Image 1: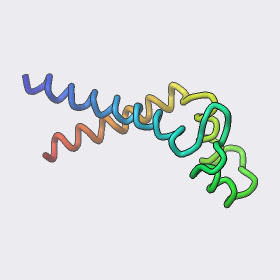
Image 2: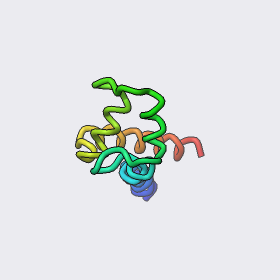
Image 3: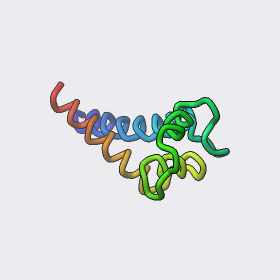
Image 4: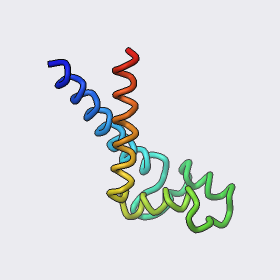
Length: 91
């Protein structure tokens, strides 16, 4: 039964991480319509000026407009799962 509990915790960590990122992007201003005026993202964009291709900001913009790529979700899920597993091990 302990293994079932551990699997549930790890799966929950993965799902929570992906869900949080999906909600966080629009919350800070990266939307399907582009960067929202007056948002945190708009403030960052105004401070950096021209956005370089391949930069973190460009990747966030792309994820906001197109949605997160499957590979990004896998990476985020893996990080969340590892963090949840580590937390279970420690606590």
